[in-house]
Length: 128
Image 1 (tube, rainbow, N blue to C red):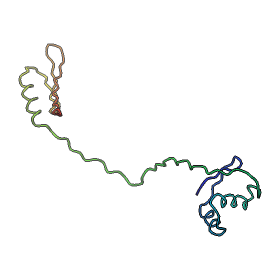
Image 2: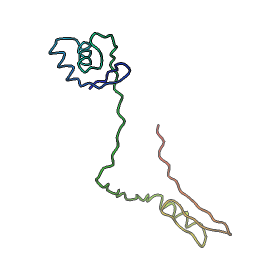
Image 3: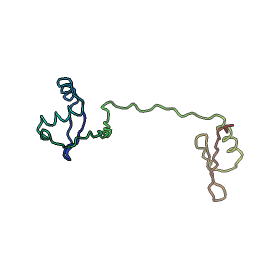
Image 4: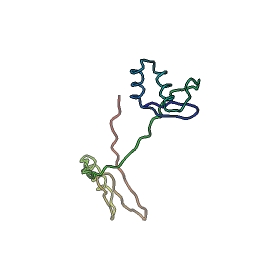
């Protein structure tokens, strides 16, 4: 399929039709396109109307949601044993009544009417 602009209007022409005219009449593509539009009655025979081929505009992508259900991910949380030991040691040093250890990353406590949180972050090794 190719688009051609004739007299300010754009027409879509099947390439097979143009090739049929080219082989039957043994003429160039430009002459075959002009002959096609003359046969269709869009331009008059012998007129000097300009016929220009227009580049096809790219189609927008069309996204459709699949009918198939997605499986829920089954990721298990990895416990960092090294951090767990360090948090437990740090928490044992602090003498507070209401210590709350949250996973292996942090613990909270209150002392003298103030609340505190100690969070342990393990950094990745730097690239060299």
